[in-house]
Length: 150
Image (cartoon, rainbow, N blue to C red):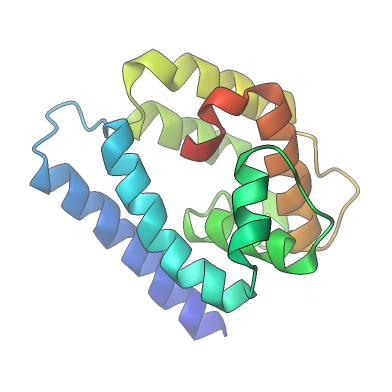
């Protein structure tokens, strides 16, 4: 499994780099459309890996976070691929750097604020799936408008 994680971490990097080159973003920022495309690629890996159903996943995008192990592990997979969650640690500083580097200027401040609000959401948790669930649920509650870009 560890080798598989390494492979998908590389895929994430390549996807982001390709999107940046393809759309020739001189500032390094991605558009919301490009972020959605990247999320689709990540979802195609994390959904089958976690086994989360479309219904549960779509409900979570609307703020209905089912206490579903597969959903929790899907969120951990997504966060793991971006390295925001690694080795049982939420890497808030990395999440802020990613927001600063790739998000459109109009939502960078909101994203930073969400990360700060949710920085300690997983304190006391040891399971990465539970940690990701707590962080992402906090992120949705903090700002549902930008939840999908985090």
